[in-house]
Amino acid sequence: MKIHFYGLGLFAALFCLSVSAAELNRASVQQRLAEADNSRPAQLRRIDLTGLDLSGLDFRNADLWGSDLRNANLSNSDLSGLNLDLTVMSKINLSGANLSNASIFGVHMGGANLSNANLAGSRFIANLDRSNLSHANLSNANWGVDMKNQPMGLMRVSLNNVNLSGANLSNANLNRALMRHANLSGSVLKNTVLFGVDLSGADLTGADLSGADLSESKLEDADFTGANLAGTRFGAVNNKAVLKGLNSAKNLDAAIFE
Image (cartoon, rainbow, N blue to C red; front, side, top):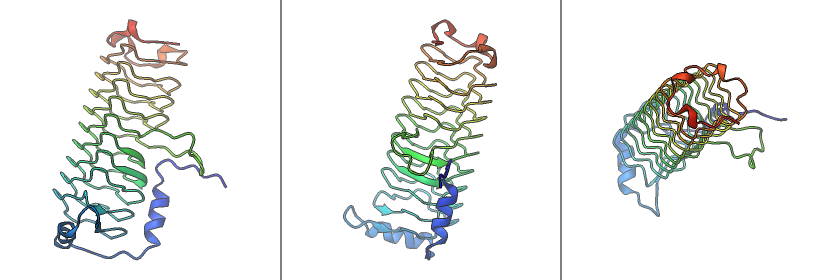
């Protein structure tokens, strides 16, 4: 049977329902973190941490794989380099958190707060629909589809209706992502790979798209008013009329229409 996953939230939810989760409070989590080191990570794997205030904590020596973090507050926490695959993170607060080089695969994060978060170099295949990523750092992030590894059908990041205003996505890979009606106003998309992305109805006003690759992307009703299009590739765009605000964009003469 061929299964099409977009955010893989169902798989993560079923996984968490299949295990017996323990319950901890903030003090218990802090104690485990204090006793942990590189060789002995704090065991928080498959633990129910829903709704806890875990803000400002250092989780770099923790094992959070498969844990339940729904509605938890991890704002300004350090989760850099962690494997957070198959966690449950819907409506989680990760504002200002450090998730650089972290891996999040098969996770539902709908409605999450990732504003001002550091996501540089991270690898996400998750559902982040309606999440807040305003002013987040996604530079060099790899959130694109790996076409060589699709055993269960196309697995991709879903960013429909997200707020990415003012975010830094320079040199990021978002190929084939779902970004319908995403707010990318004022964002930095220098040299970003947006190949095959669904940007229908997206707000790209004032965005810096210099050197970005939008080849084969869906751009109906996407708004480019005031966007910097120097060196932007628009491969397979046959009808420029579908692109809103194109005549008001900057450096339109330097954009590449193939």
